[in-house]
Length: 186
Image (cartoon, rainbow, N blue to C red; front, side, top):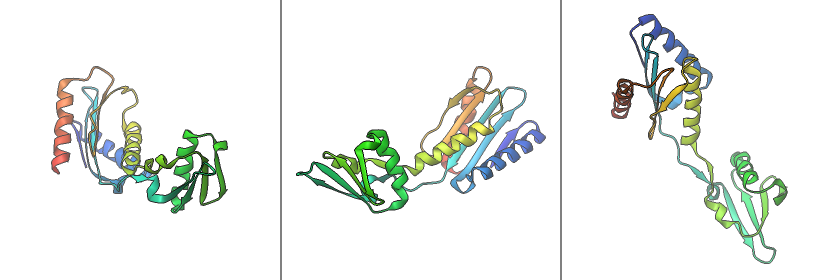
């Protein structure tokens, strides 16, 4: 972790704030590296975070098996991994009303019609979930009045430039330098 600031005490304070927020959100094990730039003279805050690799997305057919009964015109879904049941129900309730999903027991769901296309529905995306948690941390870390934010994230790097004024090209360049350093492992 590197926190750059022309004021040494300011850098130490922000390092403590970042560590505390990461500890509160249990993000430490999920982050490879972090670079931050704070300048009290120019109202700017630059933060670039490299996420660790996550597991692959989980599709519905990875955690359940599907059968379609043509005579009854019902798709039966047998849940094979109960850990994903809350995610499954949440996704299905957004697509169908709760009344359209019959759940005779904990492991079985029935939906009218041929719903075999649901097999490829993404049930869990660990990369996206981690990215969302990191954005949550960033918005907690940013100074209070910094409402102008440029998101420069790509792939496994979450990066933002924040200010309460217009964003200067030099700040964008600094963020791009941080991104390049994190991508190369420097």
